[in-house]
Length: 146
Image (tube, rainbow, N blue to C red):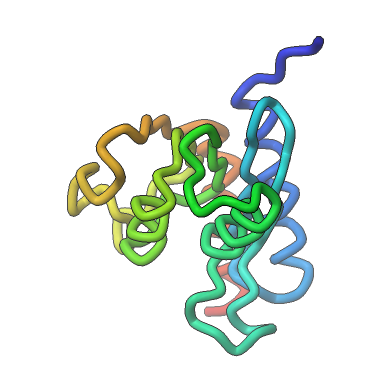
């Protein structure tokens, strides 16, 4: 059985960010992995759904919970290209996600400025994976908007 790395899965999340970019959304992508299998994929769909809660993380949590027929995701890892906001961190807390891996930091809206305790106490966190690539797609997107 092949063992996949965090970097491998972050590339998959990045592919979701590219899908968001293609449809004019802020390019954030997320996947959820359980037992080395991608069980949920999502990207921002705020504009498309006209829904401020349609962040990649929220959509991925919902898809993963549906896939597993379970509300808790404690055996799962979320890979997301941008540090989750406070809303998404709250959803991750309630889902009891086992591990969070994010690429680019979000100094303005990210949850970490409020403390890691926004997540479930058992959630492990890793960050900075493909940071430059994840930050780059966002920087380029916002340059075209300004």
